[in-house]
Length: 428
Image (cartoon, rainbow, N blue to C red; front, side, top):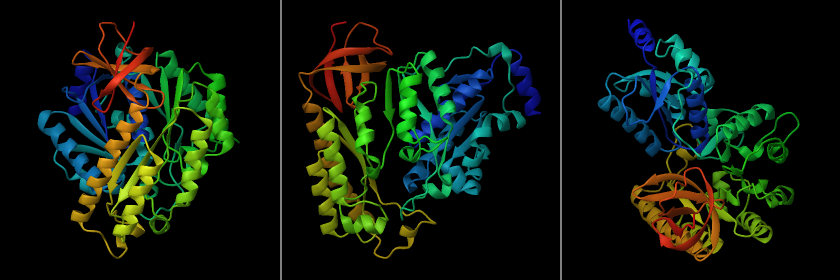
């Protein structure tokens, strides 16, 4: 019955689809790819706050908070648009399919193994009907594209659920990655964020990540290329030398997780604090204005006050531009979930508070280095009489001007600290 009604609607108007993403940049890349595929099939992609025939949520499960957010988004979508078909995919759907399916309003649950066939599954379920009449349906305006090059992880970090929900490492063929980048640049995108669970472990057709970057830079008209995340051991001299090409953004996200060697060992991370510090020193010796951002877990099982203070001191000394702080969240099926000496919520909350305070101070200190400088900014959004965009080294910039800066790379002068970034003035 629903298929018949939907077919009747499609003959007169496109099926509307809203997509929403939680979690990592890899999830964002997968959602963007699905958006493009559905638009090519004649669906009209709308914002999540608009009524839609189909609502798709790409979920995360890296922490219990991510699970809770997923449930909240599902219930909110059903409450605001009870007629919509709700489709839930991604890591939470992979880890707890029955739990997700039991949430009121959910019509279809898709794990990670089926993500690439989701459009086909939506057709088979009768939720969408391809229509050439509406093949010009456009995606929401974007200036940065997230493109997937790799998936899965062979590491066995004791706290991490990702290998269990995404499987072993696998890389996309370079031709497929390059074709997707060309498609985005032809559509007007200025920047590509190359993503993967372990993007630095890219291996396909004899190419490693360095070889892939080389081909992308030689074979596409891309203006800016940014990597989503690397592991410390992947920062080699040969890789860093590639950043002499100005199209590569001078922003490196290197996961730290702890500033204590004893905790790193319990986490089964494959570097020491000294190793990590040497990699950052290499970046700063070779690249001016480079930004280094990181992830840090507080309250890992058995973390003593002294070990936490080691992390706090290290993060202060390394002068990150941004720190992403996560209280430890026990994930069923990981070794850390059964470790003794689990840390209380109260202690984790207090340690998070201290680390977040340092994160705010670090962000402000890094941004302050560029006050008075003129930097190139890719402007993306306009809201409340203000344009916002990002520098290559990941500073958020605000600019008030009557000029249309949308999707433009503009040289602007940094005037002062403002909100979570810098206020700039433009001469355009």
